[in-house]
Length: 373
Ligand SMILES: *Cc1c(COP(=O)(O)O)cnc(C)c1O
Image (tube, rainbow, N blue to C red; front, side, top):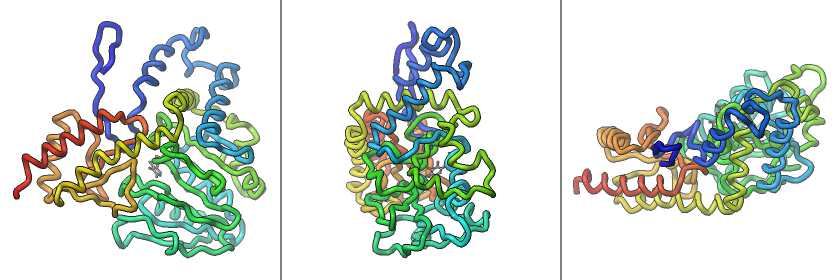
């Protein structure tokens, strides 16, 4: 809850999987600046994307991301459109030439979709490992991955939003040719950026509103982009050369991204965020583990995601009852994805501790009222 003039604004306990909760303070700042951004007499949405004011927002967002994730100088930061889904296409389109092979680890629906786009383009692909047979309940061990020095890249999904699994350690690849879809856990913890050739993330889980996709790409990869056959707007080098201003960028989304990055910095950075995320997730995992099987986690323990907590109750009827009563009590977005069923609580960076604590209390109470033994 916060005060808007004389009005008290009630904020929901928002556990949506994406788009998801934004920091309240960021929304308040955006509201304050909406009609007149820094004495321009207009909102950010009405500024020219070539204006000094917007350029400052844009470049500051890049430098904040660089600072927060400790991104070395030999990486470009791009702000693109089309969501993470367009990256499924752009990655193989730009980085697989001739017979080069893209190697994919399948850990869920999003990785399957990434592989599918490479195949649609007719590029050569292979699968390093898949846990589909286990309904994607775990991340493969690094020793299970079939990789070759010949792979043009190894593609992973660092956090599997739907199944609630997350990589804890990243595979080593020759020449660090690891590419990761980090849409649902970027900025949730410190990262060994040097291990990655490229990281991409749609903003709407941890970074801001939808509309902008962050791409962190090592500069030497841009030289690999074949010159002839790729449409201009789908080439990474086009966006790198033009500082992501080749065409009109999603200016309002970048402005909100800037504010979210400031918020993370003000909290003390990604290390602080990571600690908070561990505490938030353990509130719920503790209830699951101490429930004598009333709540059953979908993910195997050592693959558990700190961002998406997936669980089921003893019967479908209890799942439904839990979701209905939770909704009644003000908890939003707890329905599991249709491919897994059950429940899912998404605990992204901006979901406050208090919301997680309230959900923990609700889960304990619901179990007490509904367990049969
Ligand atoms: C949400 C999500 C996507 C899809 O992102 P869009 O921006 O909607 O294309 C892709 N990958 C992962 C891991 C996601 O969580």
